[in-house]
Amino acid sequence: MPFGSLWIPVIVSAVVVFVASSILHMAIQYHKADHKPLPNEDAVRDVLARGNLAPGVYFTPHCPDMKQLKEPAIQAKFEKGPVAIITIMPKGAPVMQKHLALWFLHAGDDGMLVMRTTGTVAFAAYALSHVSDSIWKAQPWANTGRATLDGVIYALLTGLTFRMLWPAA
Image (cartoon, rainbow, N blue to C red; front, side):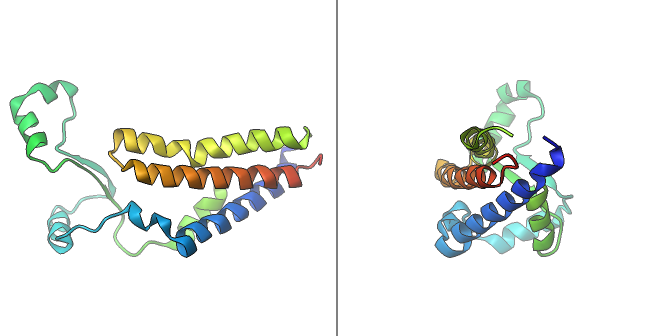
């Protein structure tokens, strides 16, 4: 089967998942609980701005060598807190067009095999990718649970879309 024949199911499934995601995030809004506001946001923002941080992911207290975790000074920093992973994004409002464009660019058997295969891959991408955030980045497990539920929905929609539009169907 020519690779080009898969473009229609790829694009249509991306649109279907985008619509489902829009409903989950904007209509049902159960992801509102994923992020909490800082009680002193302006003061924290001022401190971060003074650091003139380049976009990237920062960890505090920083401990580049695992051997340093045994040092009393490093242990004291962890005990005192805060312990945080901070993502610094480029200045300016989020450019939704860019994010939406990136959303759609990610990337002959019987219908059930096509559905199982594409649905499984979609589940791994949309749902399982969040588990490591709870394990390693201290994201609340409730966030991962909601993301996993989203992943199940997106995987089913992706699998169904591919089954309906598969070139050999």
